Image 1 (spheres, rainbow, N blue to C red):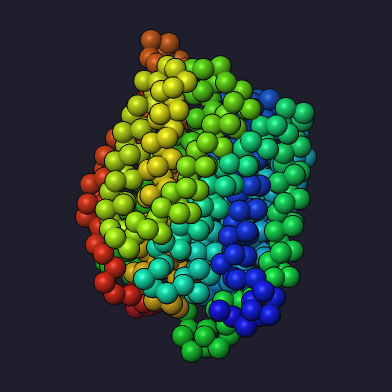
Image 2: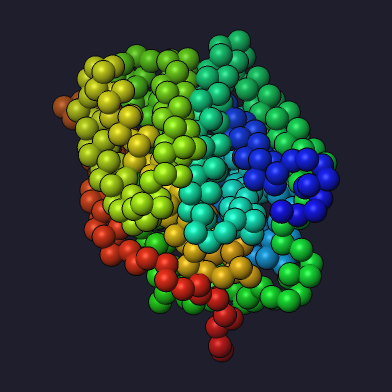
Amino acid sequence: MPEQASKRGFPPILIIFLTILIDMIGFGIVIPVLPYYSSQLGASPWEIGLLFGSFSLMQLLFAPILGKWSDRIGRRPVLLLSILGTAISFVVLGLANSLWMLFLGRMLDGMSGGNISTAQAYIADVTPLDKRSSAMGIIGAAFGLGFVFGPAIGGLLGHYSIQLPFFVAAGLAFINAMAILLFLPESYTEEQRKAHPAARGSLLQTLRSAKDTPLGMIMWCSLLCTVAFSLVTALFTLFTQHRLQWNARDNGILFAYIGILGVLIQGGMLRRMVPKTGEKPLIIVGSVFLCLSIALLPLSSTVALVVLASTGLAIGNSLVTPMLSGLASKSTDAQSQGAVLGLMQSIASLGRMVGPAIGGFLMTYDAQHPSLPFGISPFWFSAILMVFAVIASLRLMPATHSVHLQEAQP
């Protein structure tokens, strides 16, 4: 444990947990209100899908850059930069009076959205290899708690003002930045960076050097799962509004339930399961849960069935996401952690960009064809993608050695 952390009395992983928790509460606050907010400003379902996708497009471009920076200048300054950018983006969203301002705010947030991969690299720095994957569950637990409190707070605040949740999220992000500045020590010191220089080269070179290693199939599996899951989450509130006549508060309650399941699985169960089973079986089981639950969702015409499908979604995502991150981290060496985990986040961002865009198009198609059950086209498309994700998960290789991503030769 770094000396600075001992002096302040705060374990580094606890600070990382609180950092991601506050960040995800701020992120979760806007989930129940953003579709309604954008609809009030004249956005169509297709444009709502693009709005969600714009965040991921910027994250796709900037997450691996921030990850490589964290390998070169340290994790702490990159975390500070990204969280301050998030705070500014929420202010822009709260002040938005036109659709282009919503897009600007989401894109600013995406540009600074490298904090998750940098936090994962921080955990990799301070965690033994045999506990790496279960430690990644800490971030998953923070995600879960963020989805417990964030959407619930957002739904309640949105009842009074549609802009208020964004200003609260901005305030939380500024508090988050102050906590990092005051309490979080650097995990990847200047001495370590000099002793083990980070791999250089372009992002394309980094990707090329990864594709012929076990990382290649990990990234492919992550892309499929993220496209499928993000498609569902981006359109979920529109689906429940149409199918069950739910409002922001109703969806906030369901998101809170999903978050509680995520906390129980990622914050506790994974620590006992990973040493017994390893990552691959959990990824396979999680992928199957996601596939079946997504296929069930458009057939759900009652609250009970929607809750059942949502339970499967929560279980599947809670297994797949931290296990893929842990497996990727264990498949590379210390000086490439930021680059690899940033690349993983970039690939996930590509999925979160493509998924909502495709989902918005297919949802619009359903709306124009009343004979089709609303939501069946996008959700069944997502379920088909998960079939391929299950196949990819069966081909995953255990991390038997660490790969250093060398700069590609000209």
